[in-house]
Length: 320
Image (tube, rainbow, N blue to C red):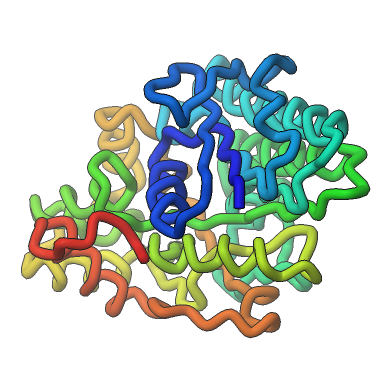
């Protein structure tokens, strides 16, 4: 197959690029700063010569979007919105204009589209879309608006010959430096990985190996379209999540943090407390119903694989 990955130089893009290239596929990465023959320049908002890569390809995966690991200033929120909506729009334009359009367009979305809740898990059929919760910061609704608009841009693209799937992905856990697992492991190893604001908020996640397997699965399954949750079936409260991670790192201590302390920490890391405090209880309803079996369904098993890989004791550079 020929696979085009738009915005493929970030953590998730590198994971997919490595895995699909090892599978023997031709992988082309669209990026603002190309390096090497397999990377092609694009700006993420206007049609250009890059669109010729999509014409005749088999799969396009759009991962483009400004990182959410930033301070949620008005400027950054606007950039998060525009980078996602514009890239989805222009990918749709390229697919629509192709003489031989790809068979499937996998569009990145986010599990953050669901409501902050503790009572029940969100699947695709019964999950509650966020934005109207009470008792949470008002600006959290903007993250939901970003996700809604991101998915809506894919939906409105006129691509009758191309199946469209929106990947409502939870946090992808990989040992790559700078990724979310790296940051959480750093906190755990310093003894700072205790409960945050009580630790009741749920963390949804997916092991990088299962993320790649799910993408392969969705490429093959011609009967699946629309929104699909890419999350392990075992979301768990932040308190338990970090306890398991500390155990994997053999760190017995995890100092708790209040919400205001989390705010200071998030500021120091140039991030936002929404990433720490929103309860994302998301489960993979459609994947499981379609027969997908996770190799890492629970966090203890996943952490037990990721920690040795992060230490460098496992020779595998990326998921199979």
